[in-house]
Structure formats: C-alpha cells, structure tokens
Amino acid sequence: MCTDMASQKTVKLLFALLVLGNVLFAAVILLGGIKPSTPTKSVMPNPNGFDNFVQATHILPTASYSEFNDLSVDQLRTLVSNATPALNILRQGLTNESRFPDDYSVDYIQKYMSTIISFRQMGQALVAEGRLAELEGRANEAAQAYLNTIHFGQKSSQGGVMVYKGVGTAIEALGRDHLCRLINSVDAQHSRQIARSLEMVDSQEPPVDENLRQEKIWSLKTTRLIDRLKDLWNYKEQNAIKSNFVARVHSTQLRRRQTILDFATRAYELDHGKLPQSPSDLVTNYVIAIPRDPITGTNLSIPTSTR
Image (cartoon, helix red, strand yellow):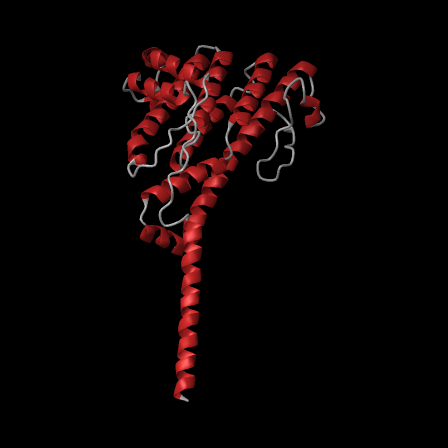
C-alpha cells in the first residue's frame, strides 16, 4: 500500500512537472524567448525624410502654435513667416522616403519623446499656414497645407512603436479635419488633386502590423523575463491595449479613405452638375480605385451630398 501511495505521489509530481514545463514552454514561445537574438534592423532610406523632419524641429521658433485659431491675421502672418524656414525643410522631407530609426535601447521612448512632441508642433505650424491661407482667401493653398499635415503625420511615424504612431494619427486628424472644411471652397481640379494625393498617402502607409512588430521587438529587448511573465499573466489587458491601438489606426484609415471619396465625389459633382450614381463612376478620372473599408475590405459608398 505504501508503494502504491509512493507511486501515486510520483505520478502526481511528474504530472505537475509536465504541466509546469508546458506552461514555461508556452511562455517562452509567447514571449519570444528568454534571450531574444538581436533582430535584423530595417534598411533605412537614404535620404531619410525622418532626418529632415528632425532638422526642421531644430530651427522651428518657440511659439504657441496650438493657439493659431485665436490669432489675428497679422499675428498669424508673423507666426507663419517665422516658421517658414522650418516648414520648407519639412516639405523637403515629404518628398523622401521616411522611417523612424530602429532603436532597441531601454531609453528609446525617452530619447525620442521630445522629438515627437516637436513633431506635433510642426503639424500645428503647418495647419497655421493653412489657416492663414484660408483667411487670405487662398483656399487651394490652404488645402495643400492641410494635405501636407496629413502626409507628415503618416510619414513621421512609419516604423515607430505604438506611442509614436499614435502621435502621427493625431497630427493627421488635425490636418484632415481642417481639410474637410474646405470641401465646398476648392474647385473641381483641386478637389480631384486632393483625392489623388490622399490616395498616394494611403497607399504608402505600412500595415499596422509593422508598428506592432516594432513594439514587440523593443519590449523583448528592453524588459526582464519577470516583467514579460507579468505581461503574459495580464495578457487580457495587454491585448486590450493592442486592440484599441489597432482600432484607432483603422479608424484613421477609414476617415482618410472616406475623405478621398468625398473630394472625388465633389469634383465629379462640379464637373457634371450631379452626384455620381456609384463609386465606379469615379474610377480612372477621379480615383485610381474605389476606397475600401480597412476592416471589412468592402467598397465605401459615395456620400449622399458633399455639402
């Protein structure tokens, strides 16, 4: 009987060890290994638009760019005039490919936090430029400034971790909101150009999985195993953070693509005196392809009115 009890204890011990081994094995797999190897760094574009953006922030004068809506025309002129040298460098960066530097150091976030704060100010300076053009009756130039803001928000965060992509989407939203207010102020030609420009921006955006991949690599390289095990224990919370991030990116993509359709529809309406019957009427002359919902993959519908 004692032998039977000992055998039962042995079986239970072996079973417990087997379960523990499976849990640890799963943890190692899910967390990417105890000592992750150094990942292959991405090939940085040369020239890199990101470098232009950083250079622009270095010469951007200190000012309250977020208060552009409260400034008089004369105050806006002064603000924009002082910021023009920096904005010119930023616009040069928009003509180059851009990627956030691969950096797997512990102080990665802190190192670039001041940079992305400056990027937000650059986005506000671009919108201030557009606002001045609006007040001076230069709607087409205002639209271009807002387009540049959208483009900058997307390009400045390519290849970055989630927090950097989040700032990029905020910059894009600022430009998009102001651009949409001009839909009845620009002519057919410029409405068509806006739709095509936004199509280009949309086509150049890397998939959101790229930001998640960078986030995972950075986390694996800079956190202790015990911290990663804690994250595994709190996987529901971690998954919720990632899901919310992906949802925000998809929401930005959806609004961008709806804006493409809005301006293409407006251009068609100005050319033909009526709304298109279906999105397919816009293909070739107004858009390259019908914009799709980033989640469902279905074609977006034309707005019932652009006014």
